[in-house]
Length: 353
Image 1 (cartoon, rainbow, N blue to C red):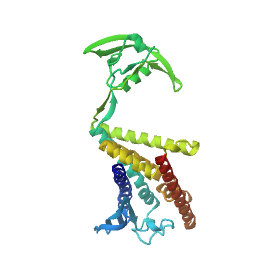
Image 2: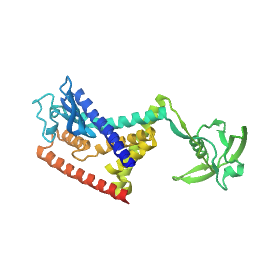
Image 3: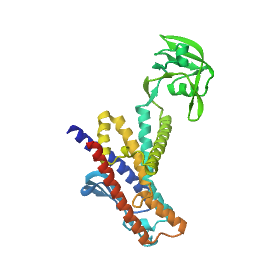
Image 4: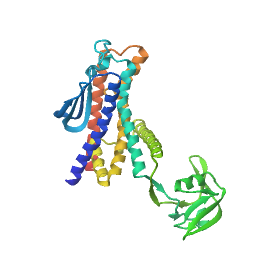
């Protein structure tokens, strides 16, 4: 029961934050472009608490805490062609670029949230760094022949200081079959040796081989600027990895066993909560990247589908006919429902299995 409660609460918090940030992106850009925002709701269903601000927007907390939504004037007529001058505060009356910016702001907010979360983690908890300490010497390797042993800490290679195992690996890889000078510490004393590296073929090219492994991991704090750069890089890499996984799923039907929906998200949310704040924030950042990318998929109803409509409008010089948009939106809604049912069934089958 404790695990179930933790999973439910974790799911509510994670999904609530991600969806609220997504809708906040729509809201802020809509206000910037002069669109009248009628409602900003935290949650769905019956209203628990509400107030109206000076712009006429109703801010409310609703009974079902599973995300939120923004309702803009004219948004309900999204399938219709813009009427232009009827209401300057209407979403449909705005220029194409403004409407596209409002729609794209939701996914953009999710990517920005991921960058902020990753950066905060790297600046406060640090990044896992493998130290250049030998944890294992492989049999028959150049390292064994040179006398390196478990516990030796590599200090420099060819005079260049070494601070991480990744740095050492990169330098070794760049010298296939070459002769190098290593300095290392053993028992508080610094020693030196010259040795010849081996070489192996990896990815179609020759790289150097020393024959040691490292497993001494430490958390290293990054300065705010470096944490931000690392946050951007990790968000980008997570996006690339997710897109690659989606392509493998669509084109090669690989990765179905890793496909997850609400039940899987709730399960992992509970595990992340149990492991601590850093794991929870990391999971939220990765899920935020996924939410941003999924919303950009060009399926009508999703943000990507609306952007597809705008691309067609830009190419044709006028909006698609109302009937075409309505049919596309109905198809998109049906497809989305089918996907939700499928991933939920898949989650339950995985959980039971």
